[in-house]
Length: 182
Image (cartoon, rainbow, N blue to C red; front, top):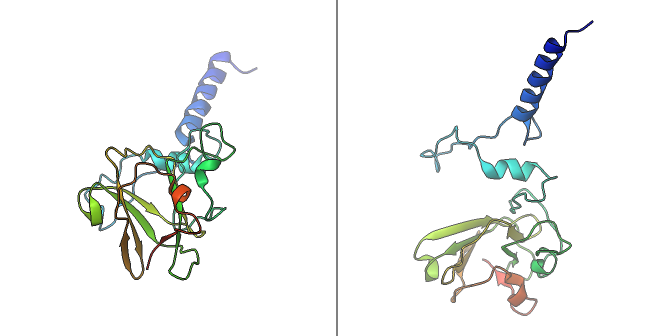
């Protein structure tokens, strides 16, 4: 017969292992990676966003576009569904679609939000445009007095001449006034 004290020890040990592996698919705690661009960062620091990008069951997960992901409904106003109480997964704070000069979706570009016009001021946020031409994030965005978008493509950078105070980019940039990059 198994001793109750012995069983309690095993249960605690198993709970400890479960808690340690919680938050990632592989059971390993995610750390920041160090590259030449971010070598000043502490490579052992736990990344909050990694945990939530991998945990698809969390209703509060961080959703953010990336070059390697695909999404849907390119050109549509993402905020119609991705809003509080909406049918989309996550409440997007910034979202839109980027096109090339021929009107085709333009994956692999980058959207940057600055505090000043034409890339001046402080770079506050950077979003990768996914394989569907879309960019989005559920990260809280502080628009303050407005942020100035820039879109970087393989042929250069396009700046929006006015500041944006909303992240619902496709609500203004519809089929007649697309966000585009070179």
